[in-house]
Image 1 (cartoon, helix red, strand yellow):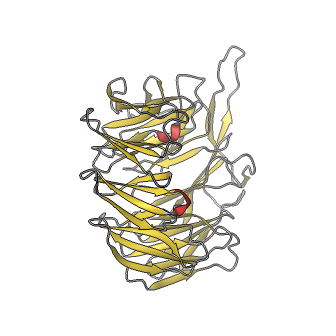
Image 2: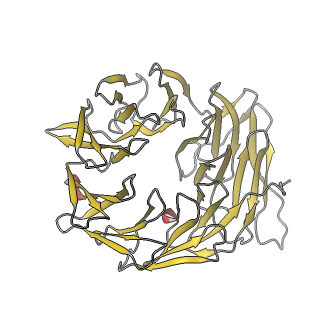
Image 3: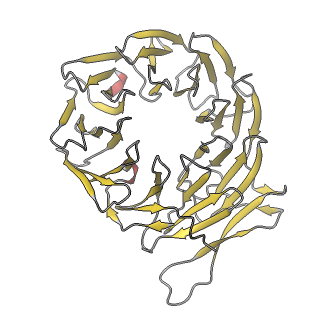
Length: 431
């Protein structure tokens, strides 16, 4: 793995690649800097926002990569920029209610903003500045979920003490269908990859999940008797064959989209007795003059006991690009990354680090898993090739975030106030 020089950024959560992979946008206080992703030394555009502290609070690219917006919710303002036309600019301000969230529509020509107190969802047009449409009483917590082809938007709403999902056409934002939910306080929803079903889940105090088709019929209500608290994560497999529901107890319930019944319950446990690859990070002897701690991964002897406890930084459940693998990190074992084979629902690998995992993400194009723990290293796992770590040249960098380029060519490695580009090379494999 090769690393670029270090560059400034103010908030690692705001670093965003353009969907076409050409650029990476980062916020530096009140400025938005757009760099070339292949050669980050080359600055493509710099936009100076009118925001005061806390400056830029959200950055998001349009799907066609033509535009990127910045938002300051403290000032109830969203600004849209065009990196290929630095003289063009669009400012969005809501004079009635404070803006608390913004999102692009799939056509890249409209920006949606949620107002405070869930009063309304405003749809702003970049073509006609005077055109604005509204969706009343949206639930910002549940948000909006777009149909895979972008033709429809599902918006969670609450009216007359009941939850609904309003399905709107993204062409004219006309209500196409209204789906009634049997939930106390819907917290989220996900449209299936084939666009035929919507999964919605209830408050965190109750593990209640409803699967609806686009006609409004409830296909299945999922409420495991021993689930405890509610749904924390909901992830569809890329093919739409499975949906994984993660609870606050750390268990993962895998549902088949054919029967809408659980085909497996994956429960990470600290005692490992079955034959599997368990990679444990160990610290190497440190020389007196050494400026950094060096580590490596060794295979553990089965049976073994994994570490539990520690401060959790990240709860992760994610399918690989082709859907053949599933990774997870939970709060009870924050230093452990689990990888399962989806076809067999068996553990493929277990990776234990010295420090809690802060970020864990799959490559968007191949089965390569990258994660970080706040050390000056990037960790990489490949099926049948093991687990390796790559040290960043600057020993003072604490990697707290990783963002993949959508084309899979590289990633942004993020630390407090700094970031670097990292590129995977096949010429060199760590020992």
